[in-house]
Image (tube, rainbow, N blue to C red; front, side, top):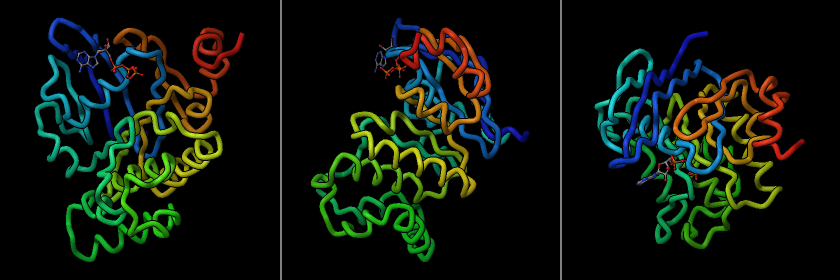
Amino acid sequence: MEEILRIEDLHFHYGANHALKCVNISVGKGEIVAILGSNGAGKTTTLRCVSGLLGKPTSGKILFQGDNIISKKAERIVSSGISHVLEGRHVFPKLTTKENLFLGAFRKDRSFAAGLDYVYALFPRLMEREKQEAGTLSGGEQQMLAVGRALMSKPQILLMDEPSLGLAPLIVKEIFEIIKKINADGVTVLLVEQNSKAALNVAQRGYVMVTGEVALSADAKCLMQDESVRKHYLGEG
Ligand code: ATP
């Protein structure tokens, strides 16, 4: 399979805290890949390194379509085709739904209208609420808006950090259906989730991180059957 993203021997420090210790992750074009792990394992830090939000990591390579992006600025990374849905649904609360989507687009021309049509088809509720201030949307709608905004830049790969966090079960189900739909439309997805079961249900492959390192990587089906994964991450056994 053609590789779209490769994280190679990645190290990252927050001051003296060695948060990522030689992380290696590979994502194939068109895949959904999940990163699982307990709190503090380094999942968010990994995604933030890819999208350039933390500045230059200590060492390692991040290859996007073969190009090492490790020193690139976040704006250049997003314009090259990597979009990041941050943990905690960061929408601009005083702007309307449509204005939030407008901010996600690069070109405010006809491609904005096409992007908007796509996002509204995925999330009809956002269209119904396009004039509503984002801060007054429900938690689920804000998450949809955060995902929709990330899609407005027409990414090739979408990094998603805990998209289901704090949402009601029905909305969680909807979010995972949307992830499958986005992927079926050709977008590769790298997904960080505490809801490991739901993540492994949509992903083809998964990585388990433990204290800044990849402890295990396998097909999602194998991970679901792995005894330690079942015990520690799926709440079984
Ligand atoms: P969670 O699910 O809790 O977000 P995570 O797997 O995403 O966990 P990270 O948030 O990447 O883990 O954290 C990895 C390590 O880096 C932890 O030890 C954490 O305390 C530390 N860390 C994270 N953000 C910062 C920061 N801004 N400054 C200093 N240390 C940080």
